[in-house]
Length: 220
View 1 (cartoon, one colour):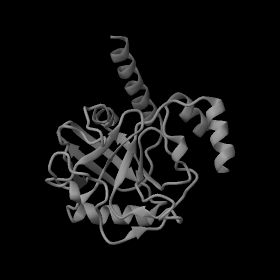
View 2 (cartoon, rainbow, N blue to C red):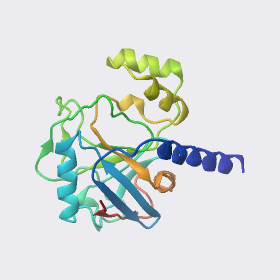
View 3 (cartoon, rainbow, N blue to C red):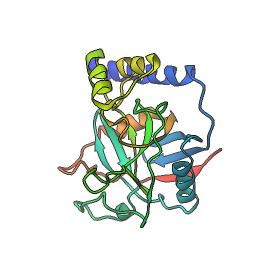
């Protein structure tokens, strides 16, 4: 009962935090799933990722694909075209178009709870940290301590603003990914749906046991 109350309280805090902030300018899209809708805004300051995402949405590229990898207190990942109608147990995560997108690192955009970011191949085959042409993830994350945030700043050469530090301490995120992946949007409604998806039963590859399909549309 305490865990349920805490989850409700944290979701309420997130909603209050979003409402207290000005929603960034940018194209808004809706990800519809059987578990509910997620509304996100794409940042204008990451134009190559924004334009590519809009292009794929208009082509209905994502429709019928799955959230194929979910990890509680970390993130949910989708966008792999190979996940459409994939058999149970099939290995997913390698599909996509024959292009990547150059990294667009903007220090103001970080892996806070609700951040939308681009997945990519590992550094050993992708030293320039280019993004996948289609796969993305939404951060659920965890809370950080001041000591952990300071250690990440030192290790990665990042200088967080006081607001960013406070967000990691009070709302959470995935700070360990900062400066390594492109953050190009954020959730503005439906974070409770993201949290629900992140907690579903999954197999040894972190694929949900019950498929969670998506349909993505431009709404503004």
